[in-house]
Amino acid sequence: MPFASHAQLGAAKETFTRADSLRGNLTPLRTCYDINYYHLDVKFDIDNKFISGSNLFKFTATQDFTKLQFDLFSNLKVERVVYKGKDLPFTREFNAVFVTFPQTIKNGSKDEFTVFYSGNPTIAKRAPWDGGVEYNVDSLGHKWVSTACQGMGASVWWPNKDHQADEVDSALISISVPNGLKDVSNGRLREVTKLKDGYTKFDWFVGSPINNYDIEANIGDYAHYSETYQGEAGKLTLDFWPLSYNLAKAKKHWGDNVKPMLKAFEHWFGPYPFYKDGYKLVETHHLGMEHQSGVAYGNKYQNGYLGRDLSGTGWGLKWDFIVVHESGHEWFGNNITSKDLGDMWIHESFTNYSESLFVEDRFGKQAGLEYTHGNRMGIVNDRPILGPYNVNKEGSGDMYPKGGVMLNTIRTIINDDEKWRSILRGLNKTFYHQTVTYDDVVGYINKESGKDLSPVFDQYLKHTVLPILEFTTMKGQLMCRWISDVRKFNMPVKVRVKGGEYQFITPTPRFTPVNIQGANKDNIEVDLFNYYIGVLND
Image (cartoon, rainbow, N blue to C red; front, side, top):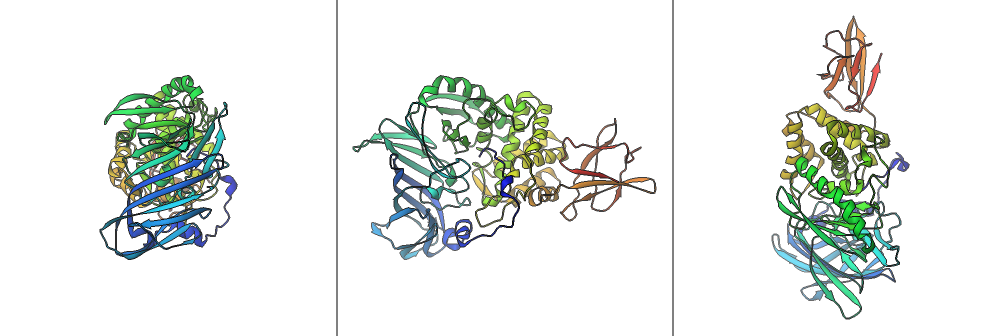
């Protein structure tokens, strides 16, 4: 998702409801089945802002059970739940639906049921930062509709097991739209069928695991062109879907941005994770969204973030923010997906940092570092980046700029760019098409770096206050210590005598000597370009 400041949310203590727990918590009614396949088949009555259709759930039982939960927003009607040709009884509580089967579903067995539903889904007023269906017209008056539902959840417009911990292995997405319009969804287009009621159905197949919020419908008067990219894993198909009257503009602008982005990210992160499904850009009215294998694009064919440079350095005006940022999510967010929404920093911090690596690949390491440093002006330190678990709640929007700054600090500490690159590539290889936790990611980086970086991650992600490096003089000796929220905080930091070379020291929460020849409190300098910390010099 593109960056947006969340400072307005404030730091007031939040309370959570039964509805939050039903959505965010993995109860036995959700863990009892593992989703294998969806066939989502939906018709869009655009004039009436009404949808109707069905979703087939194919699953494997992970334990014996007779009852399960799926999710669908309460303003949409569940018409029937069909199992082996018969209707199943179900009950609803908030946005959760509970289905009871006529006999025990045995552990390890494969089974299926189909949910038929309809209604007027929530209208997104500020997509992608709110969720639902976005209804617009293009500049020629053609209907232009899209979905965006990260955070709010895919159950805002279709029934599913709406939790990030369980990604469906593959999916067929069938979207029926009024004749004359096209639908573009994830994966590869399998079939286009003219129906008898003035509608056309588009069947798209996704062959890779995909999280629910990534599944999309984009309906409009689209043109289409295709290219290929010779990447690390072979020939990658590139498909582009601009509005018909933007075709020439798209070919030029996307041509300047997409292949350089793929080159940079395959270098730093490893092969694009979805060669099977290809890479697509789809023009949307909203600014952008990382819909897997079908990135939503609404940056109006201009560089920067709607023509602005979020870093204030000038580097951000040399490339299209949405192409780069949303495509970065193909690695962090889509390939590697957090199990809980509270860990969305895994998506957004690494993807914010990917912007810096793209700048580095194009313009050199110093440019990338300057871009990251410039992003500090977007940090508000309002609340922890790590959100509360099991209630479907993200942490602070600082997960974007502060998270990226933190990762540059981690790189600085590791002090070996090839090792850092191997860690980023290794994350994507080790957790390929998997869902992960905080401990998975931090543990992997600790192991591969050979350093215990847990206190660093904990301070920047779980707390709002910056660590402070305090200097003082005791008996003629320069001493220093960390002041922080994390017990035993011991982040290595680069310091120097003014005009000299930077050296690493490793302060602790207790005052220890600064063993750098000639250092005193008047000439000591800290690498504040790469470290986002406070300094106190008594």
